[in-house]
Image (cartoon, rainbow, N blue to C red):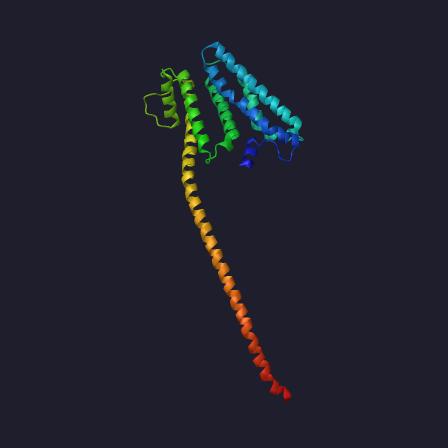
Length: 280
């Protein structure tokens, strides 16, 4: 996993680098995560018809780019090998450049090429978010996965209520978010605008991944219970086996002692039988 992250340009700080850089990266990466999240509202603000929202989206992109640049520059100064650090984190450099390019991009409605570029950028951001949170979404943390799934429904419902004209209430937005994340698709509600369709695509990907982890966590709970029972039985069997081995060792030692005791008279008989021959 670490090797694939290094190849992808998300390797962070080399553990053998400057100790100050290693310590700083422990919290700097969460600063980067906070700036990464800004890309999500910025993307949808620029899709809004009101000019105020579009300017707000560009401001968020500018803040994101400046934040990434400042963090990477600070870490490069702390590192013994700044160029190597930047190569190890080329993915973050790419995000910083893409965020800066989004500031000077065209105003919505976008052309087909700009749509593709914007969606690719949001995809890069989504991967960056997943990598930042990968240690927290392990199958053993069921409560955190359920909480994240609930938050996804809450925010996705609000997103559909804002972006989709056919959704007239927040409850309908929650229902469309559930249909999308669970990949059910009853057909009563569906995204109709480009913005809501792009939003639905990310909700489907996130929801599908979260549901997979939730079901894997539930299965892991039952498997863990079975493994716990098997471990107890194994420990009990090992304890009984150790007792049997100790008893066998004691029997062997007892038999060895008896054999040594019985061999003493036998040696005496042999020595007694050899005296007449020696007298000749």
